[in-house]
Figure 1: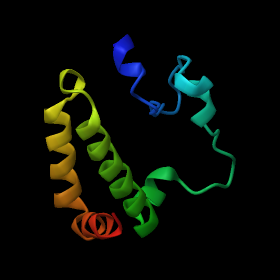
Figure 2: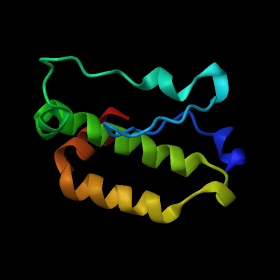
Figure 3: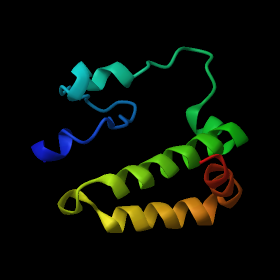
Figure 4: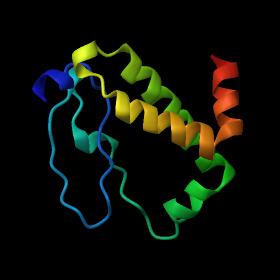
Length: 104
């Protein structure tokens, strides 16, 4: 797992009410750097995710994750994760998947 960190700029998503474990990442990042506390009156993230902008962002994140897995050294690749992500991207977000391929 330690070897994977040298290739991984990604951080984990932390569900509300869970304990956050901080860890240093390459480039001086810390896992807490990407955690933004919710403020009263902000829209519900799940509602946002189901909207057009949220779906676009999820599709974009899947697209980049799929590309990232593809550039990892063979011994660090998880082809099953990549294939599942492709399945979700093309099955749930086909218009956004096509858009991402067009942009690239």
